[in-house]
Length: 381
Image (tube, rainbow, N blue to C red; front, side, top):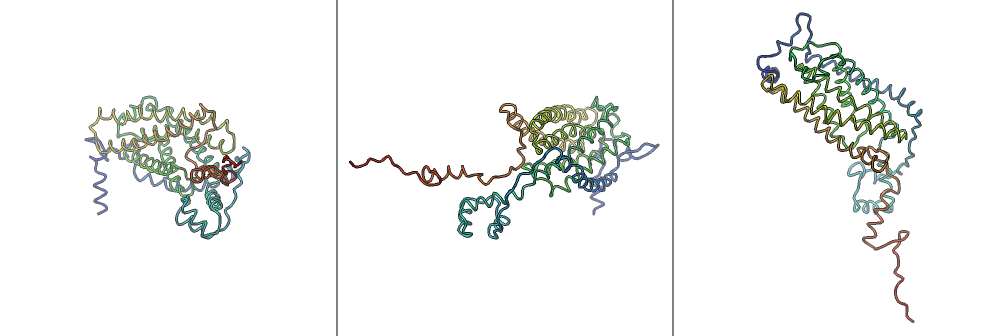
């Protein structure tokens, strides 16, 4: 059954232009071509990345954080309270007002004390600045080295300068050692991100990040199996071109170097928009979507490959909106660039103003928590 499904899935007419097939990309005459079994190499590479990351974060990122003057915020721990702890884990970390009032009666604490307990408890679960800094440092190091390596591997290749060259002779394209390692290392890195997603810092775009990692792994794997290697190397280079700038901006932000963070972020925004919203759709996607049909009749592999690219482009647009929003805040109001995807620590006073406003609506104006008496009545003579 499995063999039948494999044969059905990998039919030549599904993945290759008419008249071409697997026999055309078999090793011969000293020429080597990409093979699906090569992808297994990425698994030990991913595990090696996880091990190297642990060493890097302890021996490089942590001392670097100290050198840059990173200072952790003091977080007050929530007092031990079994009732509130049970509610926090089993029902909600953000209780409604009616739930808070009910918990207040159960525990004998005031409403404000219950609210304060939940704020402190949520802060305990938030990742520390040092954890965020170490994660950003690791990604910065990889993206920077990957971009340099990718540029070195492609600098003398004709398809870097004329993207139509990626289809010249397709699919009979000889594999180069530099392309092999570029692919395996990139695939291994994204697989390691997927393996570590449970322990990494969770942000508001967590679901989009998962979709991005899965789509990237599928795209790299698929382009390798079908020998879309030239297109794949260009796509990876375009993505690495801006990512290291974002991670370096995060590092300076966590370390408190606000001006450096702001200006690097503006540089990142410019590179992101040019590479992801201009070069990627109007050069690369044009050459994978429009140009191939002038050479070959459309086939399933053509639609599948471009479908994955379209998923990435939708994510690019989503992130571009967040990036532009943050950049506009900085340029118009001279505000510090803040990552809108990250949760911020709550202080014990967080939400007090909102509570007071809500109380005023119900009971009228208050002063020091007590209603203001109306002293404007007429006195009897």
